[in-house]
Length: 306
Image (cartoon, rainbow, N blue to C red; front, side, top):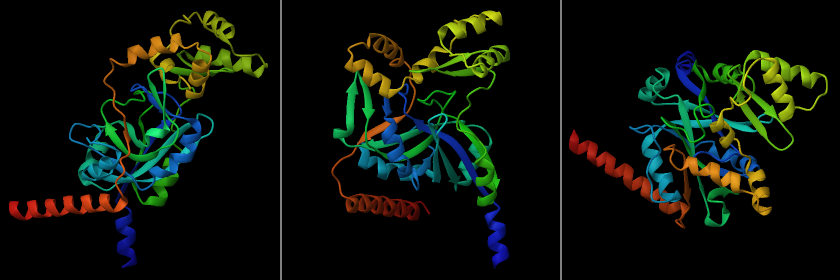
């Protein structure tokens, strides 16, 4: 019997993916850095979902979502973590649906989007952006259009085999890439910039850091100039997406947020997906009763169809 169990354990499938971070996404909401750390573990045990159109399940509110999402559960989130260097959270899910495994292995779905639920009192409106200060993870969906952009919200790694081996393998996969040739991340005192750059520009920035020089706009301009490239070749979508929520709060308090407002107007026209839901006042027992009723209806439907 032990040999059979060991054999069955070899036939598992796991994925590692970007979860979320403390930035505003293209749907004009985000979580604070503190709530990111406090709420991250609430994703453990929640479903990885796939709908027919690779979107989030529809629901009336946060409590209804907890019921509706179970219809699309194709796997379970078994691990979460936070990369201290990048500030990005990641998740690992075991995919238990054979159909979903085939879809994910085939590359039909490459992006993900998180869904959270929260109370009204935990939402702060800042220039039309919803900043959530306390929340609970609901699910992660495989989607066609991620709100955290295709550069960020990717399925980063896949593994078939036993749990221990796959977790060790996926643990080496990063949820972010600081310097990958196509994009170069530059950290400054009050912001981060992600710009398109060649290896020449990356090497120039590295050498300046090694000599103790501050990397600022002037230093960047010199590197681009020395490499014969245009500094204006900056990925604007990434720039908008990495706006830190804490910095946005400071700008609001200082009444100096006209630039942030003008950038966010562009996001309204972009049909990207991510979901947040306000909780209702239903009890846990009511949720379980609704889920049991749904399961009974599905069983009855299956018997009639048979």
